[in-house]
Amino acid sequence: MSNSTLVDYTKISPNRTSPRNHKIDTITIHCVVGQCSVETLGNIFAPTSRQASSNYGVGVDGRIGMYVEEKDRSWCSSNAANDNRAITIEVASDTTHPYAVNDKAYAALLDLVTDICRRNGIKKLVWSTNKNERVNHLNGCNMTVHRDYANKSCPGDYLYERHGAIAAEVNKRLGASAAEPETPSSGTGTLYKVQTGAFKQKSNAQTLEKKLKAAGFDTYVVNTGGYYKVQVGAFSKKANAEAMLAKLKAAGAMKGGNMKLRSRRGKRQKKFLADERFATKVIVAIGITTVIFIAAQYVSFLITGIEQTTLITYYFTAVVIECGALMLKRLSEIIVARVKKKEKIEPETETDESEVL
View 1 (cartoon, rainbow, N blue to C red):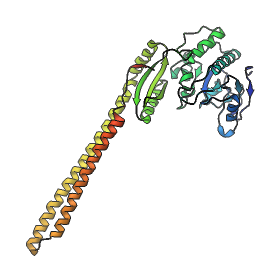
View 2 (view 1 turned 180 degrees about the vertical axis):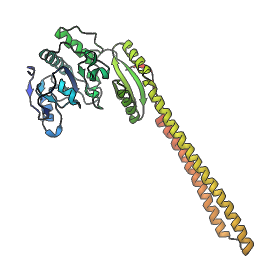
View 3 (view 1 turned 135 degrees about the horizontal axis):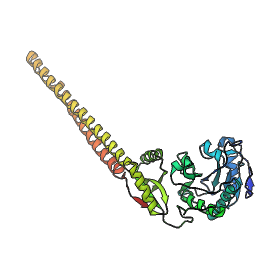
Protein backbone atom coordinates (compact mmCIF):
# COMPACT_ATOMS: atom_id res chain seq x y z
CA MET A 1 0.00 0.00 0.00
CA SER A 2 1.61 3.22 -1.18
CA ASN A 3 1.35 6.85 -0.08
CA SER A 4 0.77 9.91 -2.26
CA THR A 5 3.75 11.31 -4.12
CA LEU A 6 2.11 14.74 -3.88
CA VAL A 7 3.20 15.05 -0.25
CA ASP A 8 5.41 18.07 0.51
CA TYR A 9 5.81 17.51 4.25
CA THR A 10 5.69 14.46 6.53
CA LYS A 11 5.32 14.28 10.30
CA ILE A 12 3.88 10.96 11.43
CA SER A 13 1.52 11.25 14.37
CA PRO A 14 1.55 8.74 17.24
CA ASN A 15 -2.24 8.94 17.22
CA ARG A 16 -3.03 6.08 14.85
CA THR A 17 -3.96 2.41 14.68
CA SER A 18 -1.62 0.17 12.71
CA PRO A 19 -2.57 -1.44 10.45
CA ARG A 20 -6.05 -0.49 9.28
CA ASN A 21 -8.45 -3.46 9.15
CA HIS A 22 -10.37 -2.58 5.98
CA LYS A 23 -9.58 -1.95 2.34
CA ILE A 24 -9.47 1.73 1.42
CA ASP A 25 -12.71 2.53 -0.39
CA THR A 26 -13.89 5.82 1.12
CA ILE A 27 -12.85 9.47 1.19
CA THR A 28 -13.60 11.64 4.22
CA ILE A 29 -12.81 15.35 3.90
CA HIS A 30 -12.56 17.56 7.01
CA CYS A 31 -11.98 21.27 7.64
CA VAL A 32 -9.20 22.32 10.03
CA VAL A 33 -11.04 25.44 11.29
CA GLY A 34 -7.90 27.49 10.80
CA GLN A 35 -5.92 28.80 7.83
CA CYS A 36 -2.80 26.96 8.89
CA SER A 37 0.25 25.41 7.24
CA VAL A 38 0.96 21.69 6.92
CA GLU A 39 3.69 22.14 9.56
CA THR A 40 1.23 23.63 12.04
CA LEU A 41 -1.20 20.81 11.40
CA GLY A 42 1.60 18.31 12.01
CA ASN A 43 2.32 19.95 15.35
CA ILE A 44 -1.35 19.77 16.26
CA PHE A 45 -1.38 16.00 15.70
CA ALA A 46 1.98 15.37 17.41
CA PRO A 47 1.00 15.18 21.14
CA THR A 48 -0.51 11.88 22.29
CA SER A 49 -2.86 13.93 24.48
CA ARG A 50 -4.50 15.26 21.33
CA GLN A 51 -5.89 11.80 20.44
CA ALA A 52 -6.49 12.98 16.88
CA SER A 53 -4.88 12.75 13.46
CA SER A 54 -5.61 12.50 9.75
CA ASN A 55 -3.94 10.69 6.89
CA TYR A 56 -3.31 13.89 4.96
CA GLY A 57 -3.65 17.63 5.37
CA VAL A 58 -3.84 20.48 2.87
CA GLY A 59 -2.30 23.75 4.02
CA VAL A 60 -3.40 27.29 3.32
CA ASP A 61 -0.76 27.54 0.57
CA GLY A 62 -1.92 24.36 -1.18
CA ARG A 63 0.96 22.21 0.08
CA ILE A 64 0.12 18.67 1.21
CA GLY A 65 1.21 17.04 4.46
CA MET A 66 1.07 13.40 5.57
CA TYR A 67 0.53 12.50 9.24
CA VAL A 68 -0.67 8.88 9.08
CA GLU A 69 0.41 6.53 6.31
CA GLU A 70 -2.32 5.01 4.19
CA LYS A 71 -1.64 1.54 5.57
CA ASP A 72 -2.72 2.81 9.00
CA ARG A 73 -5.98 4.12 10.37
CA SER A 74 -6.10 7.76 11.43
CA TRP A 75 -8.16 9.00 14.39
CA CYS A 76 -10.18 11.62 12.63
CA SER A 77 -13.91 11.08 12.16
CA SER A 78 -15.21 10.02 15.60
CA ASN A 79 -15.90 6.58 14.12
CA ALA A 80 -13.37 3.74 14.00
CA ALA A 81 -15.23 1.79 11.30
CA ASN A 82 -15.21 4.79 8.98
CA ASP A 83 -11.56 5.66 9.58
CA ASN A 84 -10.51 2.04 8.97
CA ARG A 85 -11.86 2.20 5.43
CA ALA A 86 -11.38 5.90 4.65
CA ILE A 87 -8.52 8.16 3.74
CA THR A 88 -9.08 11.24 5.90
CA ILE A 89 -8.01 14.69 4.72
CA GLU A 90 -7.92 17.88 6.78
CA VAL A 91 -8.12 21.09 4.72
CA ALA A 92 -7.12 24.56 5.97
CA SER A 93 -10.22 26.71 6.30
CA ASP A 94 -11.63 29.86 7.81
CA THR A 95 -12.52 29.76 11.49
CA THR A 96 -16.13 30.88 11.05
CA HIS A 97 -19.16 29.67 9.11
CA PRO A 98 -19.18 28.50 6.32
CA TYR A 99 -15.49 27.56 6.94
CA ALA A 100 -14.38 28.46 3.42
CA VAL A 101 -11.13 27.21 1.88
CA ASN A 102 -9.08 29.18 -0.62
CA ASP A 103 -8.54 28.30 -4.27
CA LYS A 104 -5.03 26.88 -3.74
CA ALA A 105 -6.18 24.51 -1.02
CA TYR A 106 -9.24 23.46 -3.04
CA ALA A 107 -7.18 22.73 -6.14
CA ALA A 108 -4.66 20.70 -4.11
CA LEU A 109 -7.53 18.77 -2.51
CA LEU A 110 -8.83 17.76 -5.95
CA ASP A 111 -5.35 16.60 -7.00
CA LEU A 112 -4.89 14.62 -3.77
CA VAL A 113 -8.29 12.91 -3.90
CA THR A 114 -7.74 11.97 -7.54
CA ASP A 115 -4.34 10.47 -6.69
CA ILE A 116 -5.78 8.50 -3.74
CA CYS A 117 -8.55 7.06 -5.89
CA ARG A 118 -6.19 6.03 -8.69
CA ARG A 119 -3.77 4.22 -6.42
CA ASN A 120 -6.44 2.45 -4.37
CA GLY A 121 -8.64 1.28 -7.21
CA ILE A 122 -11.54 3.61 -6.47
CA LYS A 123 -12.96 3.87 -9.96
CA LYS A 124 -15.70 6.38 -9.17
CA LEU A 125 -16.57 8.70 -6.29
CA VAL A 126 -20.22 8.70 -5.28
CA TRP A 127 -21.65 11.41 -3.05
CA SER A 128 -25.10 11.51 -1.49
CA THR A 129 -26.89 14.23 0.46
CA ASN A 130 -28.63 11.46 2.39
CA LYS A 131 -26.82 10.58 5.62
CA ASN A 132 -28.20 7.04 5.72
CA GLU A 133 -26.80 6.32 2.26
CA ARG A 134 -23.41 7.70 3.26
CA VAL A 135 -22.88 5.91 6.57
CA ASN A 136 -24.21 2.62 5.21
CA HIS A 137 -22.47 2.98 1.83
CA LEU A 138 -25.71 2.48 -0.06
CA ASN A 139 -26.04 2.96 -3.83
CA GLY A 140 -22.27 2.98 -4.18
CA CYS A 141 -21.78 5.98 -1.88
CA ASN A 142 -18.13 6.22 -0.82
CA MET A 143 -17.81 9.76 0.55
CA THR A 144 -18.57 10.48 4.21
CA VAL A 145 -18.28 13.54 6.45
CA HIS A 146 -17.44 14.06 10.12
CA ARG A 147 -20.92 15.38 10.92
CA ASP A 148 -22.25 11.91 10.07
CA TYR A 149 -20.72 10.55 13.26
CA ALA A 150 -20.55 13.47 15.70
CA ASN A 151 -22.45 16.63 16.56
CA LYS A 152 -20.12 18.83 14.52
CA SER A 153 -20.43 21.11 11.52
CA CYS A 154 -17.29 19.57 9.94
CA PRO A 155 -16.39 19.79 7.09
CA GLY A 156 -18.24 23.12 7.19
CA ASP A 157 -20.91 24.15 4.71
CA TYR A 158 -18.39 25.45 2.18
CA LEU A 159 -16.84 22.03 1.58
CA TYR A 160 -19.99 20.05 2.31
CA GLU A 161 -21.87 21.90 -0.42
CA ARG A 162 -19.05 21.12 -2.87
CA HIS A 163 -18.80 17.38 -2.30
CA GLY A 164 -20.94 16.71 -5.36
CA ALA A 165 -18.67 18.96 -7.42
CA ILE A 166 -15.55 17.31 -5.96
CA ALA A 167 -16.89 13.88 -6.94
CA ALA A 168 -17.75 15.09 -10.45
CA GLU A 169 -14.32 16.65 -11.05
CA VAL A 170 -12.41 13.66 -9.67
CA ASN A 171 -14.52 11.25 -11.73
CA LYS A 172 -13.82 13.34 -14.81
CA ARG A 173 -10.09 13.00 -14.17
CA LEU A 174 -10.47 9.27 -13.51
CA GLY A 175 -12.40 8.85 -16.74
CA ALA A 176 -15.48 7.63 -14.89
CA SER A 177 -18.98 8.56 -15.98
CA ALA A 178 -20.03 11.31 -13.64
CA ALA A 179 -23.49 12.43 -12.72
CA GLU A 180 -24.20 16.13 -12.82
CA PRO A 181 -22.82 17.69 -9.63
CA GLU A 182 -25.37 18.44 -6.95
CA THR A 183 -23.52 21.55 -5.83
CA PRO A 184 -21.59 24.33 -7.58
CA SER A 185 -17.84 23.96 -7.98
CA SER A 186 -17.10 27.59 -7.28
CA GLY A 187 -18.32 30.25 -4.90
CA THR A 188 -21.02 31.36 -7.35
CA GLY A 189 -24.39 29.74 -7.99
CA THR A 190 -27.66 29.44 -6.14
CA LEU A 191 -28.12 26.78 -3.51
CA TYR A 192 -31.52 25.61 -2.31
CA LYS A 193 -31.78 24.47 1.29
CA VAL A 194 -34.80 23.02 3.03
CA GLN A 195 -35.40 24.80 6.31
CA THR A 196 -37.39 22.88 8.92
CA GLY A 197 -37.24 25.32 11.83
CA ALA A 198 -35.98 28.70 13.06
CA PHE A 199 -35.44 29.26 16.78
CA LYS A 200 -34.23 31.94 19.14
CA GLN A 201 -33.03 29.29 21.58
CA LYS A 202 -30.13 27.14 20.34
CA SER A 203 -31.19 24.18 22.49
CA ASN A 204 -34.54 24.01 20.67
CA ALA A 205 -32.81 23.98 17.30
CA GLN A 206 -30.44 21.24 18.48
CA THR A 207 -33.35 19.12 19.69
CA LEU A 208 -35.00 19.28 16.26
CA GLU A 209 -31.63 18.67 14.57
CA LYS A 210 -31.11 15.54 16.70
CA LYS A 211 -34.59 14.27 15.83
CA LEU A 212 -34.04 14.74 12.10
CA LYS A 213 -30.61 13.11 12.20
CA ALA A 214 -32.09 10.13 14.01
CA ALA A 215 -34.58 9.87 11.14
CA GLY A 216 -31.66 9.68 8.68
CA PHE A 217 -31.71 13.24 7.33
CA ASP A 218 -28.47 15.15 6.87
CA THR A 219 -29.23 18.10 9.13
CA TYR A 220 -27.26 21.05 10.43
CA VAL A 221 -27.86 24.27 12.34
CA VAL A 222 -26.77 27.71 11.15
CA ASN A 223 -26.97 30.93 13.14
CA THR A 224 -28.08 33.80 10.92
CA GLY A 225 -30.23 36.87 11.48
CA GLY A 226 -30.51 36.18 15.19
CA TYR A 227 -32.09 32.76 14.63
CA TYR A 228 -30.78 29.21 14.90
CA LYS A 229 -32.03 27.69 11.65
CA VAL A 230 -32.37 23.95 11.19
CA GLN A 231 -31.68 23.05 7.56
CA VAL A 232 -31.48 19.89 5.50
CA GLY A 233 -29.30 19.47 2.42
CA ALA A 234 -27.91 21.94 -0.10
CA PHE A 235 -29.00 21.63 -3.72
CA SER A 236 -28.12 23.38 -6.94
CA LYS A 237 -31.43 22.24 -8.42
CA LYS A 238 -34.65 23.50 -6.92
CA ALA A 239 -36.40 20.29 -7.96
CA ASN A 240 -34.05 18.29 -5.73
CA ALA A 241 -34.74 20.59 -2.80
CA GLU A 242 -38.48 20.20 -3.39
CA ALA A 243 -38.05 16.43 -3.48
CA MET A 244 -36.30 16.56 -0.12
CA LEU A 245 -39.09 18.78 1.20
CA ALA A 246 -41.66 16.19 0.11
CA LYS A 247 -39.62 13.45 1.76
CA LEU A 248 -39.49 15.39 5.02
CA LYS A 249 -43.23 15.96 4.93
CA ALA A 250 -43.88 12.29 4.21
CA ALA A 251 -41.77 11.37 7.23
CA GLY A 252 -43.67 13.87 9.39
CA ALA A 253 -40.45 15.78 10.05
CA MET A 254 -41.91 19.17 9.15
CA LYS A 255 -44.48 18.86 11.91
CA GLY A 256 -42.07 17.90 14.65
CA GLY A 257 -41.22 21.44 15.68
CA ASN A 258 -44.87 22.53 15.85
CA MET A 259 -45.73 19.51 17.99
CA LYS A 260 -42.94 20.41 20.30
CA LEU A 261 -44.13 23.98 20.64
CA ARG A 262 -47.64 22.82 21.43
CA SER A 263 -46.22 20.53 24.06
CA ARG A 264 -44.38 23.43 25.70
CA ARG A 265 -47.51 25.56 25.63
CA GLY A 266 -49.40 22.70 27.27
CA LYS A 267 -46.84 22.54 30.05
CA ARG A 268 -47.05 26.29 30.61
CA GLN A 269 -50.84 26.07 30.74
CA LYS A 270 -50.71 23.24 33.28
CA LYS A 271 -48.31 25.24 35.42
CA PHE A 272 -50.62 28.26 35.23
CA LEU A 273 -53.61 26.17 36.32
CA ALA A 274 -51.60 24.61 39.17
CA ASP A 275 -50.55 28.07 40.40
CA GLU A 276 -54.13 29.30 40.13
CA ARG A 277 -55.42 26.37 42.16
CA PHE A 278 -52.75 26.96 44.81
CA ALA A 279 -53.70 30.65 45.10
CA THR A 280 -57.38 29.71 45.41
CA LYS A 281 -56.61 27.25 48.17
CA VAL A 282 -54.59 29.86 50.06
CA ILE A 283 -57.42 32.41 49.82
CA VAL A 284 -59.98 29.83 50.99
CA ALA A 285 -57.72 28.89 53.90
CA ILE A 286 -57.36 32.55 54.88
CA GLY A 287 -61.13 32.99 54.69
CA ILE A 288 -61.84 29.97 56.88
CA THR A 289 -59.15 31.02 59.35
CA THR A 290 -60.61 34.53 59.48
CA VAL A 291 -64.12 33.23 60.19
CA ILE A 292 -62.79 31.02 62.99
CA PHE A 293 -60.73 33.91 64.37
CA ILE A 294 -63.74 36.27 64.42
CA ALA A 295 -65.93 33.63 66.06
CA ALA A 296 -63.28 32.96 68.70
CA GLN A 297 -62.87 36.67 69.40
CA TYR A 298 -66.66 37.09 69.73
CA VAL A 299 -66.93 34.20 72.20
CA SER A 300 -63.95 35.58 74.13
CA PHE A 301 -65.62 39.02 74.31
CA LEU A 302 -68.89 37.49 75.58
CA ILE A 303 -67.05 35.63 78.32
CA THR A 304 -64.49 38.26 79.41
CA GLY A 305 -66.10 41.46 78.21
CA ILE A 306 -62.70 42.51 76.90
CA GLU A 307 -62.08 43.22 73.21
CA GLN A 308 -58.63 42.03 71.98
CA THR A 309 -58.04 45.08 69.79
CA THR A 310 -54.26 44.68 69.40
CA LEU A 311 -54.53 40.99 68.45
CA ILE A 312 -57.28 41.74 65.92
CA THR A 313 -55.16 44.49 64.37
CA TYR A 314 -52.13 42.21 64.05
CA TYR A 315 -54.18 39.41 62.54
CA PHE A 316 -55.87 41.49 59.86
CA THR A 317 -52.58 43.25 59.08
CA ALA A 318 -51.03 39.82 58.46
CA VAL A 319 -53.98 38.82 56.26
CA VAL A 320 -53.70 41.99 54.18
CA ILE A 321 -49.94 41.49 53.77
CA GLU A 322 -50.45 37.83 52.74
CA CYS A 323 -53.12 38.71 50.18
CA GLY A 324 -51.00 41.56 48.85
CA ALA A 325 -48.00 39.27 48.50
CA LEU A 326 -50.08 36.74 46.55
CA MET A 327 -51.34 39.47 44.23
CA LEU A 328 -47.82 40.78 43.63
CA LYS A 329 -46.55 37.24 43.00
CA ARG A 330 -49.28 36.57 40.44
CA LEU A 331 -48.74 39.94 38.77
CA SER A 332 -44.99 39.33 38.47
CA GLU A 333 -45.64 35.86 36.99
CA ILE A 334 -47.92 37.37 34.36
CA ILE A 335 -45.33 40.01 33.44
CA VAL A 336 -42.47 37.48 33.29
CA ALA A 337 -44.59 35.07 31.22
CA ARG A 338 -45.41 37.80 28.70
CA VAL A 339 -41.77 38.83 28.42
CA LYS A 340 -40.71 35.21 27.86
CA LYS A 341 -43.44 34.75 25.30
CA LYS A 342 -42.24 37.78 23.39
CA GLU A 343 -38.56 36.79 23.54
CA LYS A 344 -38.71 33.01 23.20
CA ILE A 345 -41.98 31.71 21.90
CA GLU A 346 -43.11 33.99 19.11
CA PRO A 347 -39.88 33.81 17.07
CA GLU A 348 -39.83 30.00 17.25
CA THR A 349 -41.67 29.42 14.03
CA GLU A 350 -41.24 26.56 11.60
CA THR A 351 -41.36 26.76 7.85
CA ASP A 352 -42.27 23.93 5.51
CA GLU A 353 -40.95 25.62 2.39
CA SER A 354 -37.53 25.34 0.80
CA GLU A 355 -35.55 28.52 1.21
CA VAL A 356 -32.87 29.96 -1.05
CA LEU A 357 -29.97 31.08 1.13
